[in-house]
Structure formats: C-alpha cells, structure tokens
Image (spheres, rainbow, N blue to C red):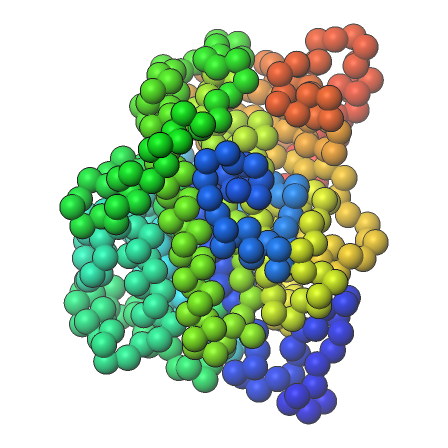
Length: 505
C-alpha cells in the first residue's frame, strides 16, 4: 500500500499508511465537574455554548455517556487505563495506597500514539499518581514530550501555583490556552514560556516538530468549585468572569422541590462531613455558584472556538480529531446533596463529543443513543488513528456506533464509588436503559479504607434504591421496597453481583 492509501473502516475514512504528517492529530479536551445539562444544546437556560454545540453538529454527540467512578482521580485513571476502577484499583492514592504501574501508563492512549510516532502533550490538571509516590510523577513527565501539568487543583488564578508562573495570562482558561498555543506553534515570540518555566519543569517542555503528528490532552479544573472561588477577583481577569449572566442569574435552574432534605438514611450519608464548598442549602449561594459555573463553561466554549480557528490558520484542521468530555458531573442540591461520587444521573452523565474531519456528511450531527462510558474513549481514539487497541482495555471502541452499524453493545453500565472519605458512602450501581439499581454499604465500617473486593466476597448492602428512569428520570421515587417490583429488584441485584466479579478479573 502506498503512502496515499486509505481504507474505509466501518464507513469512516481512517488514514492507515500515510506519511507521518498525514496521520490524524488528536486533541482531547477534558473539563472538570461538568454536567450533561450544562450546555445550550442540552437545555441549559442560561449558559451559552455555541462553539461546543457546533462541534457536536459537525461531529457525533453521545446522548448517554457515563463516568463509572464519578470523582476526579479515579475517573481520570479510568480514562488513561481504559479500565473500571474495580480492575485498575487506582483510587485516590492517600486512600487506596495504589499507584499506576509504568507498564499500565505505557498502554494509555497518549503513550500508544507516542509509540506510533506522535508528539505527545499534556496540559493542566493531573490527579493520577504514576509510579512510586516519592517520584512525584516523574515517569509521566519524562515520557510525555510536552508535560505542563500540576498534580491536584489548579485554582482560577494560575499564578497562585508555582508551576504556571511563566504564563502571561493568570486566569485558568486563558492561561491554559496560552500553553496550548505554545504547544501548537513554538517560535521566538514564545521562547519566554520555556525560558521562564519552573526549573523542575523545564526538562519536560520540548518544542514540537511541525512535521510530526501530535496528540494533546488538555485538562481543565473548571467548572470545579475549587476553581471558581477566585473568579473575577483580580483586576486583570477578563470582564466576563465578573459580570457575565448577572442579569439572568434568576433563570439558573433549581432542583425539583428545592430545598430538599437528604434523600438517603442517616446511616448511609449525612452532610456534616461534606466539604464546605459542596454545601447547597443556601439558595443565594447556590445561584452564585451556578452563575460562576456558567461563566466557566462559556469560557471553555470560547477556548474551543479559538482553538478551531487556530487549527484552521495553522493548516491542520483538516487532519485533526477533536474530543470533548467531562471527568464526571456534580450534585447541585438534587436529593439534598452536593459534591460527586453519588451514582445519580447528575454525577454520572456527561457531555461527550467526537469530531473528525474524516467523518462523511451522513455522520455529521449524529446523536448516538447507546450506553457508552469514559473507558470507551481511549479505544475509540486509537482506532480512529489506525493504532491497535491494547488487550488490557475493558472499554470498547465506539467507531462502529459512530458509523451507524448495528453491533452488539452493552445493555447496562456498572458504576461504583470506592472513595470513602469526606462523608461519602461506598456505592455500586447498574444503570440500564430503563432501570437503575444502587446499593450502599456501611460507611461506619469502611471509613477511609479502600475495599474493592468487599462486595465480591458477598458483603450485603445496608440500603438499596431502584428507579424507573423512563417514568422517573429525576430518580425521585425509590421502588426497591415496593413488592410489585421484586422481580426487577432481584434481576438487578444479580446483575450487579455478576458485573462486580466480571470487571475485577
């Protein structure tokens, strides 16, 4: 096959034997705590997202995309490994005591593309420990060509973190865009970025060869509540962070029946251990929080639009795949709850978009209804780039779904929370197309312990929930104790136990 040969793979044009520069570039934009309903296209009455909406109209939107471990660190580890937390055991290090082995990191989608000849980049928030904890992710930094990251929260003011003080822009979205521009088009006018980089980071910031294909992971810490507190606090912050949406703040959507009492029994969850910024009992503070989140999402939307303009200007738009997704959603008063980890729709469901200039016209604007998960994303990226998918991945390539093929696909999604700090209970769920089953375990027995095997060995839950998602999409009516649904409950109990065992293998 000559260098200009292409193959039709499931209705998609995928470059397979092009010269190095003709391999499709990949940019994955990952947001933090962004709910499914946060976009104009998914019905938010305040937030405007014309660029993200356009990306979906020109690409493929996944209507039922879920995160199976809805909290920052475990979710990001699942994206890297293509595995459920039940398998990779990569909970927050201070609780699980586990780190990502070198060979597992080497199988991440970034490293698989690097092995295929790509220049790799990672910008922004990292919440995964690769290698021994004392190495402080040195292995990750040494093996990614352009590694400009911080382990943990970034804050709205990037200049408050020593890793980012070489930036001219201090606000997070604008600062990360500045770093993205440096990655995309290094030149003498951007030498300041490399010259002023923190000493511990300089060795991990290499300039890209424009003739080499690239893959870039951009990781925001917005609209996470840890990064909206300082929004608009500096005189140099763009005006939008101070005043955007002030005139329509009363249109911010509120939970059904707000304020709601906590819907779970006290032995399952109480508010007293929850972090302060996740409290949603004060209406005025909740509206202010939502307004700031709207500003953050609109700023990220502007980032997407500017990035696409730059790709056009650089002449690489016709060969660059764009992926957009969140690490999970967030509870904002629903069920009387705040924070994440809870296995309700607000935490689990995310926006997910794949765009490729190789998608034929009949695919552009497609909405995929099948149940997909974050672990499917790395396999999909690799297949679109013509790179073999590692056998270690539990997620599946979504290319057949994008192509509109009738294929056998999962009928339910197993979700879990193994993070047992900050008042969160250990939980497991099975989310189907019609029903969702959730079971909870004793927080008194497992506080700050990492127990991925406990339920495999037959531990019994202390509380269960069963919701009919078609009749009750807001999950308000727990049917677990209703004898009319005993058969459904038993079916999902059995399926949950089967998945707990299967996914750990």
